[in-house]
Amino acid sequence: SQQGEEDPQALSIQEGENATMNCSYKTSINNLQWYRQNSGRGLVHLILIRSNEREKHSGRLRVTLDTSKKSSSLLITASRAADTASYFCALPDSNYQLIWGAGTKLIIKP
Amino acid sequence: DGGITQSPKYLFRKEGQNVTLSCEQNLNHDAMYWYRQDPGQGLRLIYYSQIVNDFQKGDIAEGYSVSREKKESFPLTVTSAQKNPTAFYLCATAGPSTDTQYFGPGTRLTVL
Image 1 (tube, rainbow over the protein chains, first blue to last red):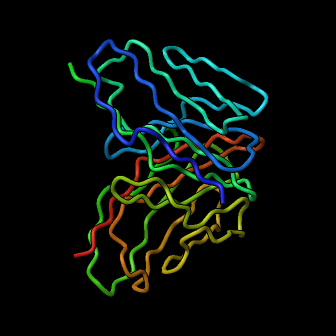
Image 2 (image 1 turned 90 degrees about the horizontal axis):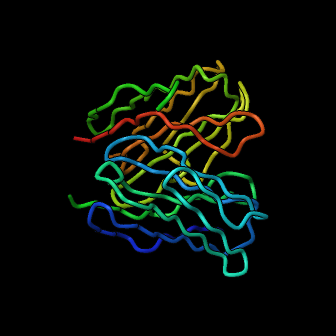
Image 3 (image 1 turned 60 degrees about the vertical axis):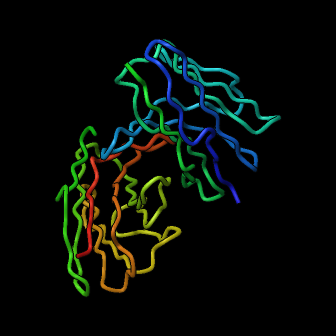
């Protein structure tokens, strides 16, 4: 069954450094999405990348998709304290409902 | 969190009680979803509705019930049959022709 698995589970970096997190999946996809969740809050959509796209940017965020390896990565450049959050990838299943990974918990140290 | 409100923010339930979580949206979205999130885990789909007066079970529907009498509202009832209801509950919506979901702020339910 489809499932996104994020790696690493947790990541702690210094402010100003870049943060990279990865998502691997099992079956072919139409698209893959990344969301952010601040502690105790709802999720916020960051980027959607379609299967025919290899890279997408939004501000300090860069998402890549490698369909041959069934993996995606989210890069946050020049990290800030406000980037501290959990980051989730989500993939549509055969019923077009989203399947969520367990997330990467990112901590930015001042 | 946009035009999606969830209430209450915190809810305490005694064992054996049914409780209802509210989700209201003013985004004019057709699709609405209820997810459950346990600590350190991803979201699991409880129920979803693509249109008024219709809804479908998700992966963990047992012990939950929903209704969709209005486009703006999708309340979730956690029944006494749900064995371990303590969790963070998130409501989401999606517009037509879009895969993006928009989330409410969540309700944290604790069973005493």
